[in-house]
Amino acid sequence: MLKSQIYNELLNTQFDMRVLLVEDEPDLGAAIKRTLNQQKYLVDWVMDGNDAWAYLENSSAQYTVAILDWMLPGISGLELCKRLRYKGNPLPILMLTAKDRMEDKVAGLDAGADDYLVKPFGMVELLARLRALQRRSPHFQPQQLTVGNLTLDYGNSTVVRQNTTGEQQSIPLTNKEFQLLEYFMKHPKQIVTTEQIRNQIWEVNAESSSNVVAAQIRLLRRKLTSNDCPNPIETLHGMGYRLNFSDESK
Image (tube, rainbow, N blue to C red; front, top):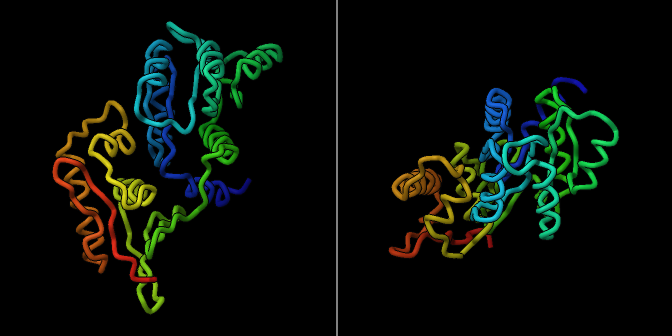
């Protein structure tokens, strides 16, 4: 594949991809997390199978895909697969392992893994396999998300506003602003709490207090209102926030 094609595919990575990475090799885990963060994935990285199971059972974050190493302290990646499938959890799973025998691959797939990547591997291949898993996921989303007169374009990380005359205005957003507006647009006119926002657009171990969430919302609101989107994000004191824009295009 041409380098330009690979680059274009990387640009199309979806912003709501939240990954649970379970890898006990520090250098490899750090490299994977860094690569995924660069491609705008949210990554929760743990190095122990018991911790991974606790995240899967108790975390309010909804993961899009799990990357599991086969050999782990505590619960193995293979056993994590089996437990998830036994509970009927359809979470897409990419298994990482140094085991390259055919019978090992069959065992991993039979345990419930959706794909299998043998170490050592290149990060470009890892990203390609994640995109393939995402396309097969029932939660796969199109390249654009439209609510009212606002359209999110995943390809160039912008929101486009259409006014009453049909003219379109592009509003550039930072990564976090894009993620935040996307979350609001997926829950239009619904009250969302600070905790819900924090759980969905910040990694589990990130320092994201209610003040950080409020500050990020102020920045997004300021950018939208400066581009003629009148008061699109409403603050409901003691309750949360709501995307409650006026739909000028209708």
